[in-house]
Length: 115
Length: 110
Image (cartoon, rainbow over all chains, first blue to last red; front, side):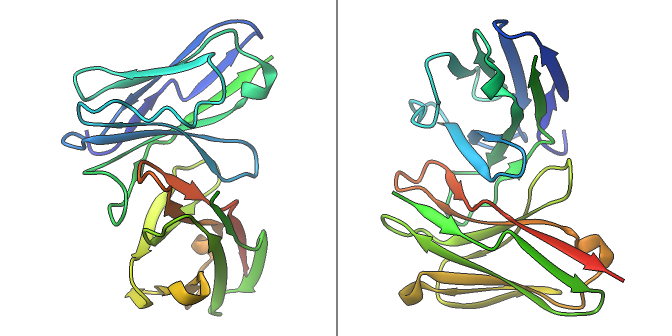
């Protein structure tokens, strides 16, 4: 596709349920990032994948959060036993290579609401 | 740690010039980028400064002074469509992701 695609665009679920968010990066982009954006806030780094290297998981806020990237392309972010504080917009981005002068291309995000 | 500070809000009128400042504290420095985000939309890349000086892209320019740990985004000939949030960002120490400021909301009025 032309850009980064995320699904679902909106997700409402009850506290305690598990959710899975999907990201389809731009074809050929080796680097993939997940960020979280709370209302009126900046973007908070969650996890980074670069090619076949081990991901940088240093931004994941708790062990309820996990992510994987299959075949160097599509990525899924999973939140287990969701809590109300997990409510936010989850943004995925990809870039040709790792950061620096490479622009990151963002998807429209998944707006997650925990009731 | 790393942090980027920028004003929370800026207002201006159509046709004016506005400057959005960003000061940073980083462990190591790998450049300053700017992103624009309209309400409910995806952040989009505007510019990158790796070295001191001014980078110009149409109506938008970005400046960096590494000795002052400071940069700014300059928007000229403002249009209503420029109303958005603007974020400065810089790579983290590991070079694995971007650290973002909290964003500056620009409101352009007629």
